[in-house]
Amino acid sequence: MFIVTNTIRVKSGHGHELEERFRNPKTVHEFPGFVRMQLLKTQDTTDHEEYVVSTTWEGKEFFEKWVESDSFKGAHAKRRESKEPSTILGNSLHTYEVVVEHLPA
Ligand code: HEM
Image (cartoon, rainbow, N blue to C red; front, side, top):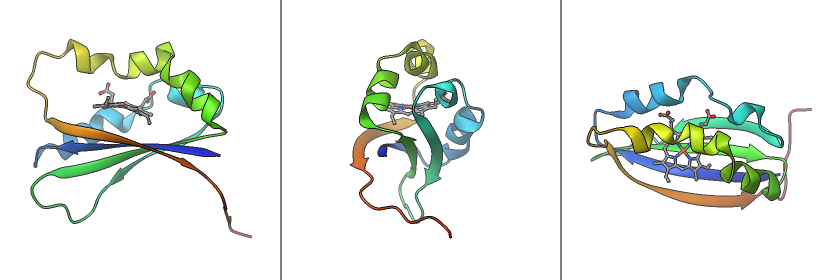
């Protein structure tokens, strides 16, 4: 399994707006190889709010196909259309290979 996280920093007070944008899945959940997506809120930040979009895939190749797909473009189209100043301060991407996993017995 393969995990990709996108960490998004937003201006203080604007976290709920970001949460709402993620509330309903668009199309990622229908994509081949998709396992799960979670929006995690980083605890104890002070001068900004931070969220981690964590996506789990059956393998790296499935994630790479999704990034090149219309599903990815569609999920991020609003960003390009919007004329409002963005409340997003920045983002950073991290990728992980799942090496060991234990599940409840
Ligand atoms: C380039 C920087 C990026 C920014 C600022 C960003 C921000 C966002 C925002 C605000 C949304 C909500 C969509 C909406 O408002 O209509 C979204 C959707 C999403 N983003 Fe990104 N994103 C970026 C790149 C990525 C990357 C590299 C990943 C890979 C893990 C990712 C994963 C997702 C997922 C899984 C969704 C939900 C898609 C769905 O429901 O179909 N994003 N992103």
